[in-house]
Image (cartoon, rainbow, N blue to C red; front, side):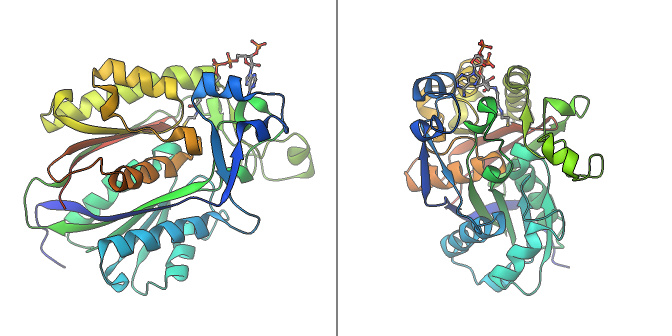
Length: 333
Ligand SMILES: CC(C)(COP(=O)(O)OP(=O)(O)OC[C@H]1O[C@@H](n2cnc3c(N)ncnc32)[C@H](O)[C@@H]1OP(=O)(O)O)[C@@H](O)C(=O)NCCC(=O)NCCS
């Protein structure tokens, strides 16, 4: 066992978006909707959909390869793979195991995290704890989704909102104290699972001809209820983590929120009282990619030059469960 040091840092990031771009106008050819409705209510202009045969594990592995290259480490140093997803290739084995094989990483503990859209943030916090235990040296945390596979393209209230993609980060330890992932927080409330769920296909409603006919294997959502909860928990998680880390909103160089709806992000921006320029938004291009969204946004923010050494960055997400979580980074190059 290696002796733990005081910090867990992000050594590299990567993301992967499938090639196929689907505009709002194309969605309007599938369901009764319009570019105007989708943009006004959500901020989304387009999304990406994976190709047939391009599964969540492939998206995850592609993002991971980029993160490993960015971290400039020997892949064989990775001994922990966490894949956050609610659209695994199959119920088991885990998508993390499939990624282990695709990346040919010989010595890994690998498992999936099911925390819906909060998955990447949960993953960072869990991996940081596991690295600090001294039992693991380098972790690959990936958020990856092929949501197009569980969307009901007869339900305009949900299918226009989501997209496919993957975001990844390589984590390691640093001897410099007080850098990297300097705090994390998480929460869950499973008392109302039906507000956002995939009811069929599990042990409660196994796949049958009937359950398929009733379209129960598709994502279902009460959008209004989720909206209300999202606004509340995003703000709560952010303020709780600021308090825990002894920081004020004015200390934040960048906020990277889960990319679900521009109106939810605007409400967080106002409640936290941070300038709009310090909030990263890319949902116009990808829609809601669930567990992938924060990872993709973190990678894009870095490549857009929005992150400098020493910056405090707040990552905050919510998702089905209900789950919520936040991570505070003090970026170190
Ligand atoms: C889904 C969401 C965009 C809907 O926005 P809204 O302002 O609440 O809209 P409503 O559900 O009240 O629907 C308003 C009207 O638009 C209609 N509508 C719904 N989807 C539509 C679409 N894609 N195109 C056109 N009209 C649509 C509704 O049928 C309704 O019509 P009605 O008034 O005649 O009944 C919003 O509730 C939301 O973003 N919720 C949170 C979702 C989320 O973040 N999920 C991910 C969690 S990780």
